[in-house]
Structures are given as C-alpha cells and as structure tokens.
Amino acid sequence: MRQDGSEFIVEIRATDYWMNGLLHTLVILRDITAERRAEEALAAQADALARSNADLQQFAYASSHDLQEPLRNISLYAQLLAKRYQGTLGDQADLCIDTIVSSCRRMEALIRDLLAFSRLTSAEAATFRSVDMNVALSWAEKNLELSIKESGAVITADALPVVHGDQVQLVQLFQNLLGNALKYRSASPRVHISAVFADDEWTFSVQDNGVGIAPEYQDRIFGLFKRLHGRDVPGTGVGLAICRRIVEKHGGRMWVASTPGQGSTFFFTLPTQSSLIR
Ligand code: ADP
Image 1 (cartoon, rainbow, N blue to C red):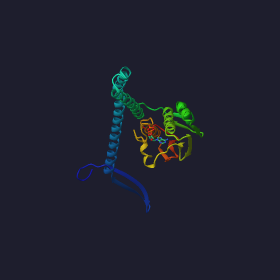
Image 2 (image 1 turned 120 degrees about the horizontal axis):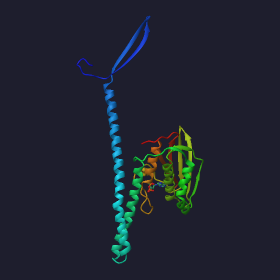
Image 3 (image 1 turned 30 degrees about the vertical axis):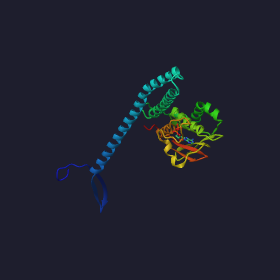
Image 4 (image 1 turned 90 degrees about the vertical axis):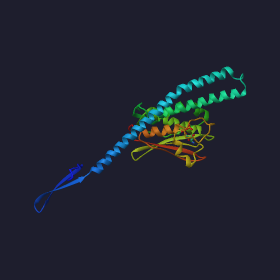
C-alpha cells in the first residue's frame, strides 16, 4: 500500500550475500502495476480478436450455407424455363435465360468454394496424424487423372517425407496446386514436386513451366476471390486461399516465386512436429 492508501502490485526479490564476515540480505521492491495492467490489456485484446474472428467465420459459414438453398431453386426454375420454352419466346428471352442459368452455375461454384474455405476454420476439427506425403500426392494425382491425361502433363516427384498433419487437407493442398499447374499451363506442361529439410522444417515445392505470374501479383493471388485470369479459364479464386490456410493451420508458410512466361514454383513449409493451429 502506498502512503496515500492506494494499493499497488509489487514484485519482491531478495538475495543473500556476505560482506565483512556478515550475512546481508538485499531486498528489491518494484512497482509492477503498469506492466501488469499492460499485460492484462493485451490479453483482453487478444481475446476480443479471437472472438471477433470466430464470429466472422461463423458468419461466412452460415451465410454461404444458407445462400445455397434459394440459389438452388433459382437455378432449378431457370433450367426448367430453358427446357420448356427455349426457342419459343424469341432470341432475347433465350439469351436472358442462358445468362441466368450460367450466372447461377457461377454463383453455386463461388458459394461451394467459400463454404469449403470457411469449413477449414470452423469447428470441424482436423485430425492430425502421420501422413506420408508421397501417398497424399498420389491421391491428388488420382483425383486429377482426367485433367492430367487431357493436358498431357508430365508430373515427376522426388521422395517426399512423412509429416504430422491432416491427410484430407494435405491431399487438397497438392490437388489445388497441381490443378492450377495444369490450368495455367504452357504447350507441354511439366510439374515437379520436391521437399528439402532445413532448420527443423520441410520446404516443399511444386514447380511448373506454365504461364507464370507477374511479380506485382505474387502475393495477391493468395487472397479470397483474387484471380488474374478471365472467365475463359474456369475458377473462383479461392483455391490458393484454401492452400495458404491449410499450410497455416499446420504451422507453416506459403509463397510463390515466378517468372512470367517461364513458370511458377509454389513453396510451402511444414514443421517436423506440426500441431493444429486454430
Ligand atoms: P482460380 O484458379 O480458381 O482462379 P486460385 O486461388 O487457385 O483460383 O488462383 C488464383 C489466381 O492465381 C489464378 O486465377 C491464376 O491467375 C493465378 N495462378 C494460380 N496458380 C498459377 C500457376 N501455377 N501458374 C500461373 N498462374 C497461377
């Protein structure tokens, strides 16, 4: 208590020492009220931030989930209109109906991907265990079998390690990266996957010889709905946002290095003992 009666938090340290044959005790009292208040304020701020993040995730999940049902109805009835009245209402009407149907398909794809993105952070807990990244890669290749055949891509890989993570998410990660390498490809696409170990973490790379990405866009492409390509190439701009989130949930980082016209290499790290980051 101070002389004026107000209370304060004090830290007391005591040390014994000998001097001139006598045992002395040095006692240091330090007023740590300000420090303690700052710590409490910081903790409260982190708490508020976590709560608002959780609310935002819940909002994204609920709204994309609830948007699906009315959209499905609009889509269904527009398709019904197209089927029943195509060619009977005139060219203008046909064009209108076609636009509604294709816009619905696009909206469905956007909502589906947004839902997949928000599910990554929702309450559905990821299951972490040992994952052989060679197996994860071959699952991804299997899921993309048709696109790989159609594009004539040659995919090669070095031996990959076993990591601690969520198998479904890691397959998805490879699948999105390989899918992009096939979508944004050159005439004879080649993709190579490898991993190196340094400083307690694995750095994976997925290298393609595709169209490449201009330096000013190399960070932006990881944002939600961010695309550099027009409607001629299918996509919603969510794939890389999902990749980055998966990597971050595993405690890693993700980035790209690219030369336009020559290709891109997507890198991601996974710590040896990755644990779930919520
Ligand atoms: P989407 O492929 O659905 O557009 P992504 O989030 O996967 O969404 O990618 C965002 C953008 O980044 C793409 O629209 C494309 O312009 C660019 N991109 C992604 N991967 C590659 C790649 N391997 N080579 C060139 N550009 C790429």
